[in-house]
Amino acid sequence: MASRQLWFSFLQLPGTVPMKMCAMALFLSILAAAVWLGLSMTTPESSGGGANPGGEEEGKGCVPTLLPKADIGLCGTLEVFYMELGNVSCKIIPKCDLYRQKITTWPQPIVKFPAAMDGAQYLLVMVDPDAPSRRDPRMKYWRHWVVSNITAADLKAGNIRGNVITDYQPPTPPPTTGLHRYQFFVYLQGDRVISIPTKENRNRGAWRLQNFLQDHRLQNHETSTQFMTEHDGEFTPPDY
Ligand SMILES: *[C@@H]1O[C@H](CO)[C@@H](O)[C@H](O)[C@H]1NC(C)=O
Ligand SMILES: *[C@@H]1O[C@H](CO)[C@@H](O)[C@H](O)[C@H]1NC(C)=O
Image (cartoon, rainbow, N blue to C red; front, top):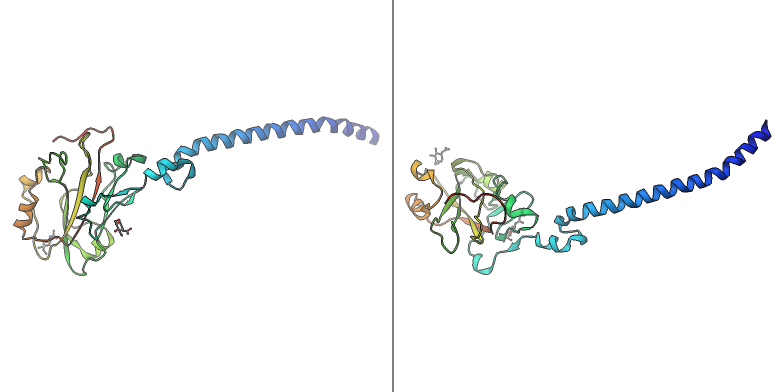
């Protein structure tokens, strides 16, 4: 009995070695395929991070570039942050990772004034002076956002809320109109009551910002900033 078992296991032994080798070879080839597949799938995706050596070119382009010298006049201590992009103050929002397109769907940015004075009340105005284009700004200013009665604490935290006079409208630069400037101004409101007549508030384009400021006796802004971007997506341009 025992000898038969031994004989049997001896017989089995030479059979299992090729089987194990076969299984090992199969396993290795599956592993290799998985690694190759994994690499080819993750390479284009991770290139947006900027730290990936495989996606150098795209990664570099995904860092917003600084505004040209001629446009840094409004660069103050105001900071604007969009999700995914972070700080866009005084920068050009790049095309890569569809950032220019995304900016049309992202909700309102964080707008932060770290030096806001405790107890003060502020007014925020966001406009596009390049409507429909910088070369032909006949619809200047396009009013994107007006919020009054913002507390210093909220402005320090970048949480824009208060009395929303004009709802936030994201940038939607039309095709072939080049780079648009999106400008943010913060005014010390004091005890002024800020309003825009209903009729005037109906249209965003051709807003007379200077008249609005004069009417409210607002002279100089406390701080400001701007960023730039242009159309590159497939969305329908707004009606001008
Ligand atoms: C945001 O960017 C502006 C312009 O480059 C810079 O002055 C400011 O310090 C930045 N703020 C933060 C919090 O990174
Ligand atoms: C905004 O502030 C002004 C000035 O302090 C005040 O008269 C007004 O009632 C405030 N409006 C709202 C909606 O809080």
